[in-house]
Amino acid sequence: MRASRSPAAALAAAVVLSAFLAGAPGPAAGGQDSAKPAGAVQPVSWDGWLAAKANAEKHDAAGNLVAALQYYLEYVRQARGLENPVRVAWGLNNAAFMIIKMFRQDPTVDLAPAAKLLEDGLAVAGATEDCRKRLAQNLDYVRSRLGAGR
Image (cartoon, rainbow, N blue to C red; front, side, top):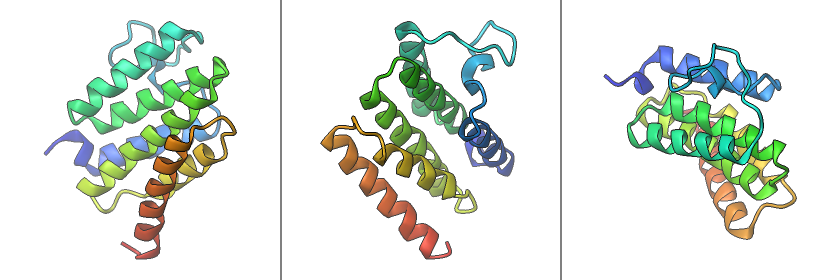
């Protein structure tokens, strides 16, 4: 069984997401690819954004959805710091989609945090129409699953 399917991984994802939504420093800052001590906050930069993006995509492709979620949340933090609303909205969508993927593997995963991320993404003033469409589609999916009581 892959780590992204385990209840412990789902709990880890929930803790990471809760910290992010509460405004804690980027969770990927002390992640498995980092030589910095746990809890160290990466400075905001284009290089930081690019690294977060690359790591998120790498972990997503490898099926490590919890790590991918962490890096997408760092992607969002970096994009916010760079005042780039287009990338903020896409990052929120991508982070939510990692939770959706976890849910598809394990229906006990809570989709409420994904709904919050998607709603936040839709509220980003500079989001593109394509991004808004994807955010809305994903939010419809999440709401349909939350309403169905799983």
